[in-house]
Length: 130
Ligand code: 5GP
Image 1 (cartoon, rainbow, N blue to C red):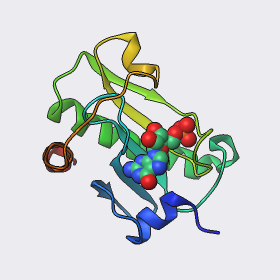
Image 2 (image 1 turned 120 degrees about the vertical axis):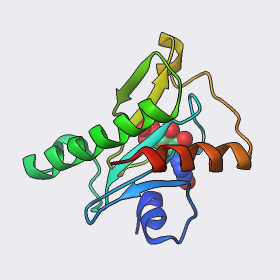
Image 3 (image 1 turned 135 degrees about the vertical axis):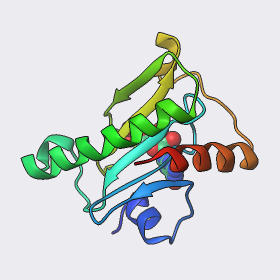
């Protein structure tokens, strides 16, 4: 069965999209640690990040780098934190999170955003993506 994230790539499930190319896709996390919390995935479904081929892993990291650069420009923060967990959704994803404190990386303190806030921050990040 297709993962939630595969359904997001196909448009079957809506998302706040940031960017995509042939192999990778970036969109806002629906339950963000902080405003701008973004997930970057390979379109090809794989459960664990270190089961990706070296080539696909490198491609995912390069795409994440470009998204992180856009995020840094779009969202005021101390820095961009990066984490890979995958215990909830078994489709590889890189969390890119604008952080100011360690708590922003703990996946416990969540930020509630309105639809308008999700749309506005997604637009700002997408506009800065190169
Ligand atoms: P993990 O698998 O790394 O533990 O966490 C999965 C992440 O995916 C969580 O931060 C969660 O909020 C996010 N997530 C789960 N379902 C959806 C969804 O349907 N849409 C979006 N945009 N994010 C999701």
